[in-house]
Length: 266
Image (cartoon, rainbow, N blue to C red; front, side, top):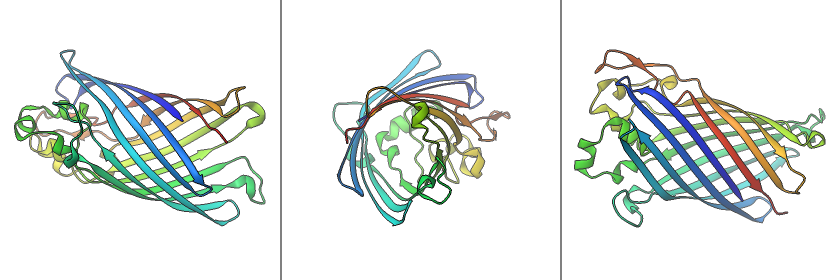
C-alpha cells in the first residue's frame, strides 16, 4: 500500500503571465501472488489552480498494472510492465472509455548487494511507451475554447510518449534510511494539444520535454514495513522559444515536491 502527494507551482507559464499550482494525491495497492508477479491498482486525484481564477479538479483516475520479472542471474532481474490508464469524465460522473490509455515497458534491476562487491546499491531501469488518448476527454468545443494552460492543468498533452527512467537506491537499514537518485523523462517530438495555438509546439527536442532529476530519501520507521519518502523533482528541461509570444518559456515545473508513505506486508 502506498500514498503519495506531489505539489508544484509555476509562474509565467507558457510566457503569457499565467501561474499554475497543482496538487496531486496518488494512492495505490499492490499484491504479489507469486514471487515474480505483481498486480496493482492506483487512484489519482488532482486539483490545479490556474491564474487564481480557474480551478481544474479531477478525481478517480485509475492506473491498473501487471508486472512480471525473472532473475536471470543472481542479483539481476529482467521483466516487463503493462498498464491501463482509465480517466474520469470532466463533465459528469463515470469514466470516459475512449480516453483510456496504455503503457508497455521493459524493466531491469540489479542488486549490487548480491554481487562480489557486496555494495549497498540497487539500480532500476525502465524504457517504455505510452499510447495517450487523453484528448478524448475534451469535446471539440472544449478543445477550441480551453487555453493550453487549462489543458496542461488537466494533464492533457495528447501525444504518444517514450518513457525513460533510471534510479539508484542505497539501502542502509543500519541507519534507518535509503537515499535515492532518479532520472526520468517523457518525450515526444511535439505537443499536440498546444500546437494549434503556437507552432513552436509542433517540433520540440528531447530536452524540451519533461526531463527530471529526483534526489530523495526513504526513512525506515520503527514499524516493520512502514516507510516514509521525501523527494524533489528538479527539471533539466531547456526553455522553449514561443513563436506566439516571442519569449522563451519552460514547459514543465522547475521543481515538484513529493512526499509519501508506504506499508508492505510480507
